[in-house]
Length: 170
Image 1 (tube, rainbow, N blue to C red):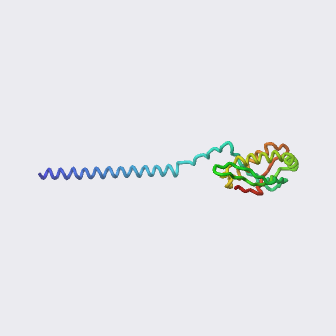
Image 2 (image 1 turned 60 degrees about the vertical axis):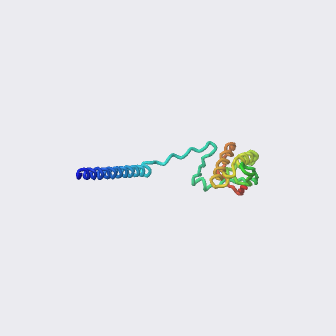
């Protein structure tokens, strides 16, 4: 009878030690996985490359410091009102701007091409959404697109910068 009791105690203690061993191994595996994940995320993982821009976006180029000191001739574009794309209700933009040009020759050409310039402005602004024109980045993007479009048909010079002198989105 004593043997049976002793044998029962040994198997009970053996079962407890097996359970304890399994718990210790599981905890060690969890700790190792956590440490491995931390090393991967903090040390080995590199930042993903920037997402490609959509074809509609134009790369904005900042002028060099030397270029900023020379102020070119200015051409004011009178106020215009354009309906813009909106899902819920009608929205519009009321704006006026000034073009900074590279030289006097292009100033004369731009005055002659004013209908083309206004047409380009109206078409580009009219294809923007209310949300795009609400923030600073959207306005900068619009200026870059306008500059690129206007420069595409000017022959004697180029637009150096566009200044929004009045811009209301409603």
